[in-house]
Image (cartoon, rainbow, N blue to C red; front, top):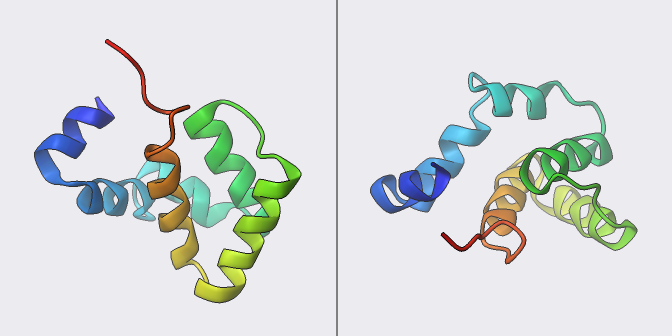
Length: 88
């Protein structure tokens, strides 16, 4: 379903919809406390796994540099990973 949205709407609109504080996913991101908690929630929701220590450090650095906008970047990055893609 996400891939159909990406093709139809464009990735930027899909990410904006996913991270919007009124969507279920976005609400969970906004309600999570620390950057680590938010990163864990995003990884669990999108890749069904915990982030590695290295991935958590990258997220923390991105949040320090870009603030809450870093989470949209994280969602974009995870949508483009081989782990997220699947073969029909």
